[in-house]
Image (cartoon, rainbow, N blue to C red; front, top):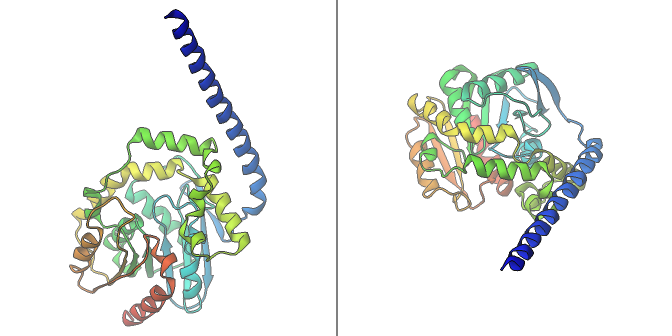
Amino acid sequence: MRNVLKRLGYGALAILGVILLFVVISFMNHTFKLKSELSILSPPGAIVKVNNHQMHVYTEGAGSQTLVFLSGGGTSAPVLDFKALYSRLSEQYKIAVVEKAGYGFSETVKVSRDIDTILEETRTALSLAGQNPPYVLFPHSMSGIEALYWAQQYPNEVKAIIGLDPAIPEVYEAYPLPSGGMMSFTSLGARMGITRFFPGIVDSSAAIMEKHLSPQEERIYRALFYKNTQTSNMNDEVNMIKQNAAKVAKQGIPDVPMFFFISSGEELPVENWQNYLISYIESVKKGQYQILDGGHYIHNTNPEQITEESVQFINNCE
């Protein structure tokens, strides 16, 4: 029996050694590649200092109206993720993509992710980048909460909200959030570079799958993905989202025109996703919605239709 236990112990140690060796090799590979990828990670927009950290704001286009794009939770490269949509709209409007702390070309830093801090950082970043309200907000997913709060707190700054499968407060009453332990574990794996051994994850990103990016943009997207997968700021947003959503829910439905583009919700861990969003938008005084046959990153699966209907909606808001 002792010999059996010894062999089991040696076997366990051997397995542990192999795992540790793999992690060390993975981390060294990840560190080397992060340094080599810096050469292609030049911010295409303005870097502004907000709340003692750097934020990236990308702008293009012309016109009297500015459209502001707010990314969903965990989107590693917002500027590239939204490209399929804003590149179609920038012929008629100014567009701005705000990358929050821990996203895209912005800095990952220790900063509160309560809804007030997030909103004030977004507003300040836009101002420092030379943009002025009123804005038409294009929030995707989790940023729907920020957009609604913006309209509640500063109604004169929000001309309209065009939601890209946006989350609304009631969704988070049913949303099964991952545990803190699980997020810490997967985040550690990302920091160790484990995600590089599973390229199918980044290849399944909607912007890449739908072929909206040039080869060079795909390389940049992948580099940002490996750099920004599950940053501490993203994890903190998840930890705060129920509290943030509850705060927005208490203030009711803001009185601004809204148009929701809604997916089937099949990719999301919430039953009746469509019903939640439809119920909300039907309570908006000037609310419209369109159900599209596309995935949750609906701005990548249906950019042409969203562009056409958004232009018409904005014109009707004049």
